[in-house]
Amino acid sequence: MAARYDVAVVGAGPAGSIAALQLARQGARVALIDKSEFPRAKACGDLVGPRGVALLQAHGVAVAGPPASDMYVEGPAGRRVRLPAFPGRSYPGHALVCPRTTFDAALRSAALDAGAEGVQARVTGLASVDGHTRLTTAGNHRVDADHVVGADGALSVVAEQAGLVRSEQVLWGFALRGYLPAVPDLPMISLRDERPGRAYPGYGWLFPGVDGRANVGIGVGLLDNRSGSRRTRADLTAYVEGLVARGLLPCGEVEDVQGGWLKMGTVGTVPAAGRVLLVGDAAGLVNPLQGEGIGPAMESAVLAARAICRSPGDAAAVYRQSLADRFSPYLNLAAPLQAALLRHPAVVSVGARALTSAPVGRRLAGTWSLTWNDLLDGATPRPALTAARLIRAAAGPLARRSRTGRLLAETFLDSG
Image: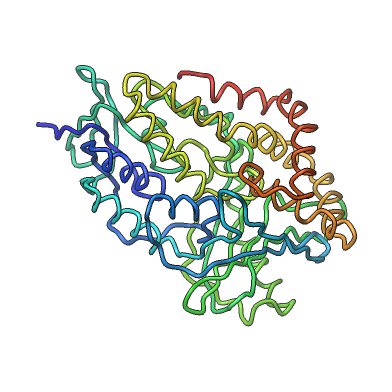
């Protein structure tokens, strides 16, 4: 016999747990399925952005961790610009530092406390049976549900089984992170690459952590060529050695190194069809320009849960439209821009050097921060916001006409 639920949520990361929490609070019978035993670690920078912090507060989920405000960006030549963290009308002026081991366990516990049922199992297949969806697991157990929420990451089994991924179109990325003893004063993203006319196809980071340990990592954009992920371990070693040589780290002994795949900008993934809705990394909701995934993941989870509860007969279409309303104004520019920059490293080199030069950096830091971090909507009016809106209005139509822009439009409109 198969266990029967209103909704089966596959994956108990931030997206899955928030979806399960919202659904359970609305009275749905929810299975929160994950292959891992919690707590467990994930490859991540361990920063929850301002929108994510606001969402946690709005939904009454308490997660402990120190705040992080402004951020340094280091350019190819080593010059640094400080990007300000402006408080908005709908989000605070800071991020939250919390290791995923702690963060994910806290969100999952909140979902279980709300009434979701935890199931430890590896989902291996989906099939339509008598008007509902049947999930099978590695142990040959079966779970039946009226709706399935796929929150099982960039390599989502749910997305693959439901036929919602076109891998050759995806903007793939790969990230590798570790921890080492250090206490940075502010988060830093490094675009450093001293080769003239060249640019690393991603960035390094050094973020504050907890208990005297910093989070250090490398993220690389790969377009549709996933074989490039092999370079990241050597690149992480070189990056850390450079930080030590410049006096930004006391040592280079990196521990607990872990990697993970990224799908960026939703390109190549249809976020919902039929009774299956994808959220977070499974839907490709990672910021293409700076790699943030936790905030968008939780936002998409709220939208998916709302669509299922309010429009159960048409949840996929309602959810796709909700995603388009929230994310397409930003992704229509960010995803094509990311794809173009990865193909033209010389342009990245020139642009990054200009943006991190002293006169340009000082004038554009606020605009860069709002644009890069997808913080225009809900921002407090200021000159930096006006400039960011002008950039979006000018560049958006051009980006939408690109190949990536056309694929992105199909992402939101296609019903699978």
